[in-house]
Length: 253
Image (tube, rainbow, N blue to C red; front, side, top):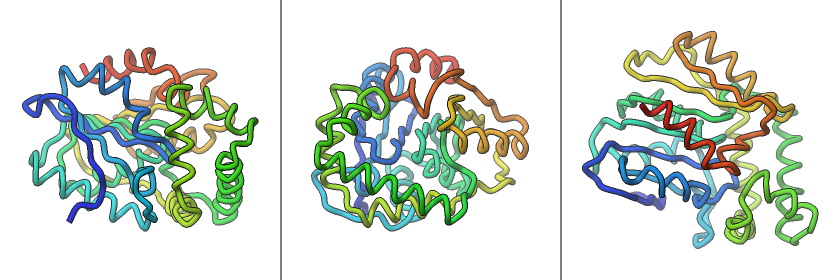
């Protein structure tokens, strides 16, 4: 039984592309990417648990998300995918698919994904911050809403973003952040045919992304690390999509 809502775009005969959004991001952040890439790729977009404004549900584990997504994909399309692109937390889901080896991935793109575990203390601080900021957004705090535009969403996606936060439970927030904090990418996934790309900005908030990049380069020397100088967490991916599509095009060639 598949509970995840999974969207499809383009011609099923084309190479397959899976796009996995990040935490507290509506799937609509992929709109520009879908519009551009659907002529050449068949695009699969899962809406992770807790991120569908139409359904009240609580996130339990990344394992359950991955199991459903793998089952859905394999049943419909087989065991090969051309590219999986995981943005931020979506990169954990993408990494777990890679680790499981049930699907053969040609190109794996991970952007600013937190793939090294963090202390319970840090997780506790981040959880409190997210709970506080999310509640302020639900109350339509002017400063919080203004800060979200241009950092987390484009203006055109603000309404659906706020609707998502209105519907997301505190339990889901706590469970996601606990799962993120405890996840660590294994150092020895042996898939020689998979090209690995890790993208991240250089601003202070990208501390864990920088740490992850070092970890990946150490354990996967053939991985490609791409940095965006002066950029914040997934800044171009979320806000400057036209510019970011050019980066992805170079990877996908």
